[in-house]
Length: 163
Image (cartoon, rainbow, N blue to C red):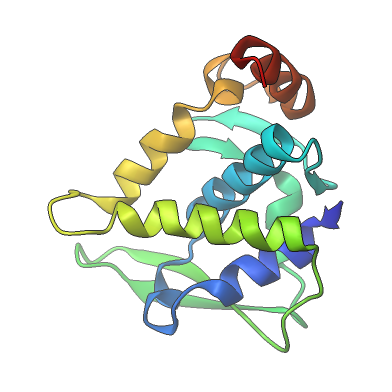
């Protein structure tokens, strides 16, 4: 399993340069959760060292926030949204981290899903992407505020789907 720091670094580094200003804490949590879920249902492995909670804005992890505070690897920037609200975004510092081939493919897959929701006529891409994450088996079968047992949920999902 790849560490949360390494997967975060590789995920943010994989964002097109013109979209780096969109990588907020909420967005990173949604992306990393979907990468973790994708790995667990397809490869029976996941991102190491992440505990997920089903929160008001979707799955989130204290470990993700803690990893982003590593100033040697991540840069924190403030930007103003179109509505005038100030948000914190993240970018990477330094070279890409060494991660497994399976994790690289999951990152590509999830970023493609995110990008598809940005195409013309897709509406608000963040809302569409968030709906996708909220529709995953692990989130749908966990009460708000509870810890998502992503490993058990993935095993159950594979059994239900006959995978």
